[in-house]
Length: 69
Image 1 (cartoon, one colour):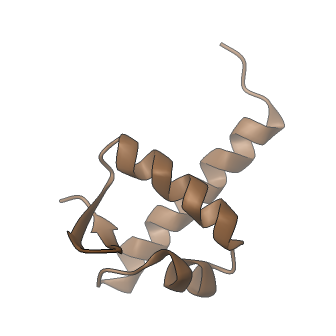
Image 2: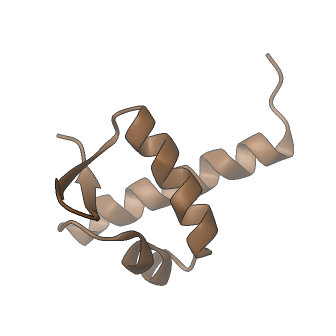
């Protein structure tokens, strides 16, 4: 199993997106997550795709996301 710098960066971005959602205390859309976290919107979209796939975030309403309980 090999982890390169790109993998580490993706993991850090994904963690930052999840932390931003946790700290917000309310569902956010990708644009707002990018604004609050200071990350690029494309990075946020990629991270959210990963978080959706592994069940870390859920959508209480269309286009808004929050951490899974």
